Length: 560
Image (spheres, rainbow, N blue to C red):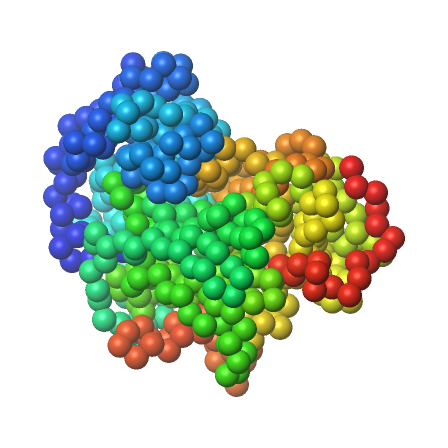
């Protein structure tokens, strides 16, 4: 799950480990335990999870394996509320046969499994054994050898979660994508770990690397913290794989957000031409699978400025690969912005550089999957509406909205104040939601988002989420509403309920400067450290409280 570029010593160790694991993946009598080094507490958590009757009932008779055992932060389900103060672990188990994840929340202080979540069509990040196996399959594949013209001894990028439309990855198979660089070309070997075979090969072209200074991110995780200023109170933490998470957000004593996080990034190298794509995750990892892109530096709380005027504050976290500035090295940023007048904005940004940058195709499209657990004056009693061009139309059941014309679902339409959606509680208090249109003075050119509203369920984000895996075309590489949260849209009623919003903006890389037949660099890094030259693509909606509006727009379609 996600990307971690492994050069030098790390790659040597990865290749060395190929011959060190003797455990077979074929057994179906019980889940294969994680075979990497675990602490005593992690081992205890794994043992308790695998002995739990609920876990055994879900995994019995299937080809299953533990992918990760990670320390739980302040993300926990209602059933595991004790984990707010107890030491708890998230044990991730994957079924190859039926393509689902079982997440067990284990309280090691009490020696109890507090909750077990069944997450169909989701895949945790692969563990070290499977990364080694994917690399072994790619290094010895005749197609890879023929394409390269030599037998490789190592990959340039670790085999992390990837997809390719039209391949077996579309059939709910677990896929990884080690890459091999030859000059300014990169060969992707898409490895199907369900069948243990190389399912597809693709070449992409890259430009020369920019300057960069490598750094070693291993073992670092920012300190969690809290903020109280300008009427706002909130807490934050960097998660294992869901980026920077905010939780328990209030304004003037009233609840606003239960939490907000960023479970995954989709990096699509143009699915129309059937090029591959990656699933990126950001976070501290913590003995889970997936090689998340690690944090760079501590979480910062900065003044939010309009010129020299302080308008509020923002909570910021940077995530970078260790050789960002080189091709196939990514950097992502999260900014949660809070205004003294009660507005707030959830902002995310991609910097590149990509693994393919042909001018006419292979231009990466970045699609962050942002989860916003809205809580207007508390979790329950909220309703969702969209502007239909004349009035606010309230949704009676879970739904999604598209940036393009789709009967019953899109395109987005805007009020005179550029608002497209709203959330309101039973007392009439709420927020209108304004998408990015290029108006926020952060270089963003517009969100073009997919928006989903779902009923809150513990298995759908109360812990770190696995990656979305289908069924159907690989979620990394879809151009339509199938971006992952659609799996949770099941027609359940949402009027006056506990709602979760999912926002998936879209940004297309432009590496051609102005004046060279291009509109300007975007989602692109020219050079990394020590003197960065970057052109990030920031996206994200602005939430405006009703109290700031002179009036609500009428007529209003009756709420369900």
